[in-house]
Image (cartoon, rainbow, N blue to C red; front, side, top):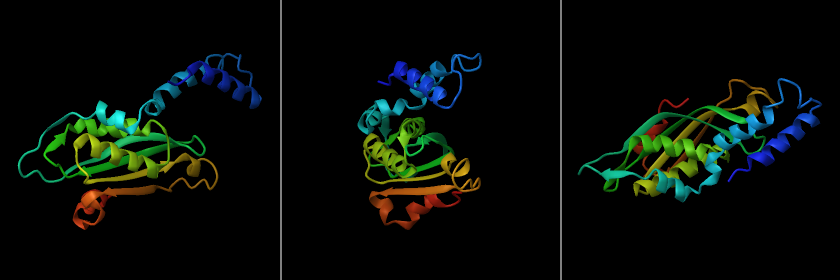
Length: 189
């Protein structure tokens, strides 16, 4: 579990280290607010990929000739583990080939959201989503493409506000099937 009391103490220390007065009117409640926010935005740290697959693994029998399932433009945000900086304006595109069952569509978005609620690398986020979806849907054939903006590049360092990062994770048939890959890579910006 996330230790909100410890976070409050450390945020107070950070404010002091920045030369701020953590007792002034605008900051007096900031440590508690940040602790509550961290508990919410880092909730995924509390669960393994397997536990997330179990939480959101509601499936239904697939139709006889079910083709690939594609869900595009799932909006998430995360925090990079290098600077704890916001990764934002992220769109996740997911596709899988059913093997006898399909997963509830809202569960795919929930998997993406929960996997993003960790200190992450965008590359690992794609891999985590693919692993969780593969287990939850019972298929090795999964593709995940993520396009996102990283404040560690836009607000600091190089300060390149237009830079977007695109990552791809392909498993099973998606590794070698260009047609399956195109289902989720075309039009990604």
